[in-house]
Image (cartoon, rainbow, N blue to C red; front, side):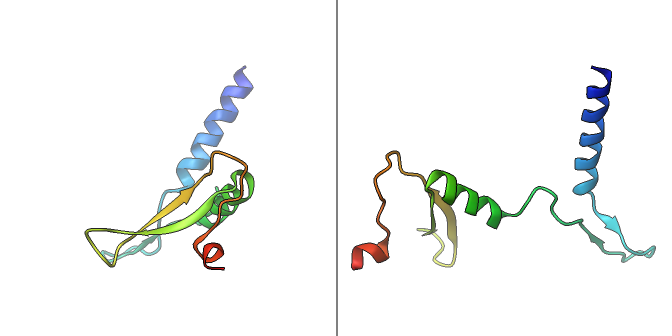
Length: 90
């Protein structure tokens, strides 16, 4: 149990360091940058949701701001094929 507790602590430290910014130079206007994602990207997550759960990706236009779009996924509750807008046009 002690070793398991040590592994948990190491994992928490690794996660904390992954999202911590690095200081690049030692001046007043030093800029910071972050380490790359260690848990994947949104594109990978979108692919997994589309593949495993038959999810459909949509950009929903906002009603208040015409330039703003909401990133959304639709998950059907049945195994029936869900038609997209392009499928319906055909």
